[in-house]
Image (cartoon, rainbow, N blue to C red; front, top):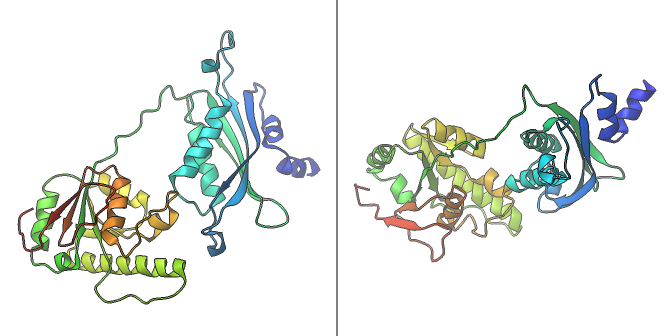
Length: 307
C-alpha cells in the first residue's frame, strides 16, 4: 500500500515504469511544463489566468533499425507541447479532466504513441497543487495517417426582430433549406430593454441571455429551428441536417480569442461567430449592416419574400 501511495504522487514516468509489462515500451517525458491560461468552473476563475503545470509521459513503439540521428524517425518533444498548446487554443475549458483527455487523445494520434500518462495541476488555487492524472492507451494498431474530417460549410443568416415576426419567415426557411447546406440562424435581443447594471461582466451576461431569450422566441415560431449553445451540438446538427438557432453565451464566454463585438452589437457578434466557421458571407435580413465585419455581409429588406 505504501508503494501504491508513493507511485500515486510520483512523476508519471515512475508510474509508467511500474505499469510496464514484460516487453516494455520506450518512453519520452515532459516535466514541469508551466503555462498561464484561463481555466476553471468557478466564477472567480473567469477573466483571470492561472498557472497550470503539465507532466506527461508517452510510451512509444521501439524503432526498428538505426535512428541515424534523424529527428523525423522519433516522436518529438515538440509534438507533446504542441498538443497542449493546440487544445488550450480551441476553447476555454472548465475542467482539468477535459483538458487531460483532449491532450492524451491528441498525443495518441501520433503514429509512434501507444500510451500516454498526463498529469495537470493548478498551482495558484491554494497552498498546494491541485490536479488530475490520467492514463490512456491506443486501441489496436498504430495509426499511419490521420485524415481530418471535412467540415460542413454552413449557411449563416441573421434575422432581425422584424424578420422573426415576418409572415415571410416560413418561406425564407424553405428557401434556405432548399440550398442543401447546414443552416445556422443568429438573432439579437428583443426590442424590450434588458436590465442595466454597472458591473461590466454582469451586463455582458445579461445581454447575452437577452439574445438567447429571443432565440427561443424564434424556435417557438417554427419547429425546424432548434436552439443550440455548444460547438459540439452545432457540429452534430450540421452533419445531420438540423436547422440551428445560436444561443451565444457559452461559445462567447469560453472563446480563447474574446470577440471585440459586444452583445448589443448583435450583427457584429454574429459576424464574429460566422468567421469561426470560415463563412464566405452572412445574410442579414431586416437590419442595418455595421461598418466593420469579420465576414462579408449581404443585406436583404424584410419586405422581400425571395432570397
